[in-house]
Length: 213
Image (cartoon, rainbow, N blue to C red):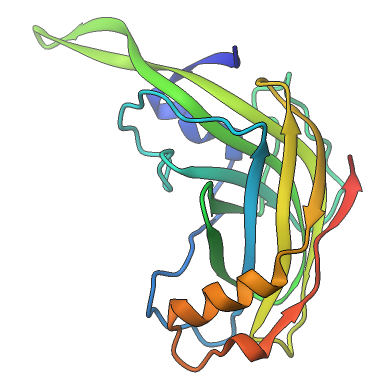
């Protein structure tokens, strides 16, 4: 069983407090924006964990098939899962659960601090508004990945491969993480992405570093 939290719909974003921008993966054939560096990497859960039934709710990045990572520029904050706001993020990465993610970012150093993978969700707390019944709450079961992972994106690179982040877990939270080097496969996948002006040969290998395991 996973950690279960009751979340009022308007407070779904509180896990990633503030106005932190949500960074999504480029679509096939989509150009890399000017001044950006492409982060190329993947996430794997060990053991694999499939998502169950999900209802729609807006978390500015969806829940099906992704892990949301709260990202900070440094390690000055502590991730406190007992707090109402566990982490005030500078950015939120939306990374695919299957396949590689290609996220355009400004150059610099970042730390992935808190990952959340929603396993299932359903409406709860029935209420009556204006004589009509409805739902105001959402009950969500999630897997929490609290680890400190450093990624560096040099300003002179167009694409940086950070590796595959393999998270060991107990069904509730991460118990460990390692970085797997799948660079050869990543170059093939990048070539198939057909990103204008970007070739697989130009991708730099700079694997993520585990700061806290």
